[in-house]
Length: 54
Image (cartoon, rainbow, N blue to C red; front, side, top):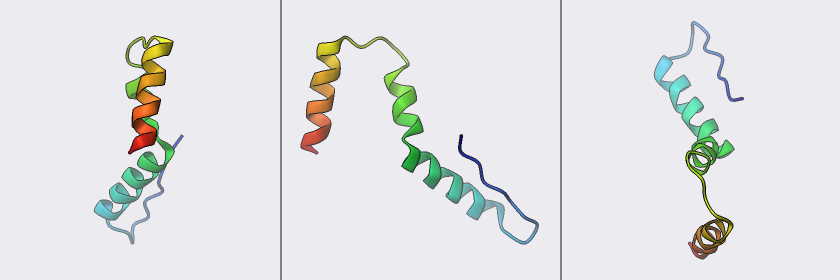
């Protein structure tokens, strides 16, 4: 789980940027998109193959 502590001294925008960065590094959105619907094993292989090419 990703969280960011915001103190009174820090700006909310900076805390939001930190949170977004942590979410991106943890691949949370990618995992949620992959689990949003069923993917057959062959489709997973195809997507992984395409992802490795990038």
